[in-house]
Image (cartoon, rainbow, N blue to C red):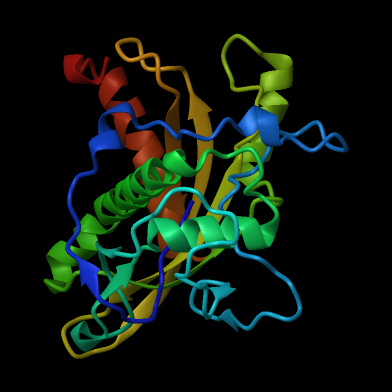
Length: 268
């Protein structure tokens, strides 16, 4: 998840991918599970932390991943990269975040040692689905930010993000604990990935930005009933770093509960 890039190359504009309807990922995560861990495998598309690579501080990704064909590669993959809808940096002249091309995706997985067993003809679909999930995460963030955007008339922007696949969020820990007590009600499987996105919230036009951290947990969801394809669920919310974020989380939870208690039929 979360392959967004900060450098500029020739790209094509974002569009809804053909794989978006299933919300599924063509990667079988169970086949990538480590024998030394009982936790589900993390998303295989993760940045390499090798000491000989220079990482971009904006996304914790290698600064340069080759677009050249990999040794022994049988299928030609596109080197075109798609522009996301997610604004990057503090000003409009910094443009939009970009997704890696299918060729870069394959090269990155091979460099990380995660490419074994993944069919080359599945890489393009992987890119489309992962792009779609990132767009979905951003839409959820926009919903959280909506009241602030209405006040300032300035859209939020994504400054940076980082993948934390091995760090369970506090909420995920609580859900797992509750799942142990009430397995029929709460999820008993941890998220397979986590991201922290650092969003710039406007303080008012030409008055600067407030950095707000969002936590995104990626869960596997039941297979789509119509297509049989695997699906995902994103749990996106502001981290409890300040009073405003705590208030937003409380209001988000308490509001629907209160309306249900008051007999609002739409809440049932």
